[in-house]
Each structure stands twice: as structure tokens, then as C-alpha cells.
Image (tube, rainbow, N blue to C red; front, side, top):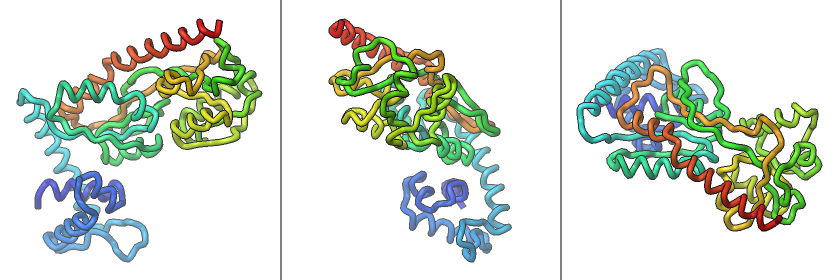
Length: 314
């Protein structure tokens, strides 16, 4: 029985999905099923209780899963120690991230990291925030990226950077000409929001509650791209992370205005499972993220563009 078989097996148990286990290991769903049957034949046991509708291990399967985790942890530690002895940083990194960070914060960091460590195989998957936490707890992914991090047993949290929330609106909206907008002014507009379970939506709701305002969105979406598209067609205004609208501001599709509140900071964080042995590649990647240069430089560019537009309005 090979280490690769145990890895596929633990991924299957953690995800409770043959398709997800296949995707995590770059093999077909059929191959996962074949490996499971091969393990059952090798140990002469039934690993998965096929009489149940939901994925469930047998008692023997549970025992095998516990042993597989221990073996993989020892292997991870050995791999890390051997990698440290090499002059070249290499190996895989599986990253689970929310859409806004993955699409708008991450690219410059990834570019810089892969330029420095070209032998690393970095795989990025976009997920909803609650799924990122699950991915890390189940050890399905090595590193997670979320906004408004929540302390959770079994998860280490490393501060990434702070983003800023701004109001976005159609350039023809009267608010577009303002330097600063109050939450009361925002509440009078048609509001486009994120789904209720998304952390940024919860933070925005909290901002309005603090000033005793109740805003009911005319539209709700589960990701930043659809929120921006709704505002672009003048369906309403929205409060979003500043770094997610750089391109739209540059081409004049949207206008961004600062919000008059002390709670407009959006903290971002790096997650990994407590007790996880980080490979040299993972350590270097976290170091790259916490360096902060790419996003900081981009923020300066955004402020410069917005300042230029304000001068034209004035």
C-alpha cells in the first residue's frame, strides 16, 4: 500500500466526496473508487458502509483512517525536513480562498512567489468563506485566505493585510461627485448587497446597525463580480473592498467614494490547521503574503487615480 493511496483515502473521508477527492489528487473519480476497492481487498475489510445513503466509514474504516492520518503526518514532517535540506524550494501548495481575495488581492503575490520559486506547484480554488474553514479543518487544503477571520479551534490565523471598504456607484449617481458619504446617505439609495452569510455582508450590516439604520438590499449576490455588474448597470449602490474595483475605476465603469465611518477596515487573514507541518514551500508562500508589497503598491495607485478624478470634478 503506497502513501499516495492513503492520501487519496484521507481526502475522500475529509471531503466525503469521490469527485472532490479526485480533483484534489489530479485523478479521475473512477480511479478513487478503484483505489478504495484495492484497499478493501488488500486489508480484507469493508471500509465504507455502502448500505447508508450518506458517506459513512465502517469501524474498520475509522481505524484505517486514524492510522492513515498518523502516517501522513509523519510523511509530511519527513518531506519538510528533506525539503529544508535542499537548496531548491519545490512541491505542491493547495490554496482555498474566497473570491474577492483570490481574484483581486492574490495575483501579484502569486506572480512574485512563482518567479522566485518556479518549482512550486500552486493550485488555487475559489470557495465561500465557510467552506474555506472546512477545507482547512479537514486538511483538504494547505492554506486558506478569508476576510474578517473568526477564531476557531484547530485553526491558526495569521494576519494578511487590511483592506478598506468603499461605496461604489454608477458614475452618473450624484454620490459619485462626493469626497465622503455618510451611511444615512447610502441608506437612501437602492442597495446591492452580498448574501447574508458572507462575512463582508455581516460587517456592512453591523455598520448600519451602529447608526440605527436598517438597509434591505434590492439585490443579493454570493460574489463580488456579480455585485459590481449590478452597480455598473445602475441597479443600485454597494459597499465593497476597494481593491476589487481597481479595473472598473480605471475605465470609468464605476465611481468609488469613501464612507464616513470608523468601521470601514476589512481585515484579511491566512489560515492553516494547527499542528500542521508546513513545508518550506508553504512557509515561503506565507512569508510572501505577509510581506505586503504588491497590495500596498496597488492601493497607492488606486488613491492616485481617484484623486485625479476628484480634481476633474472640482
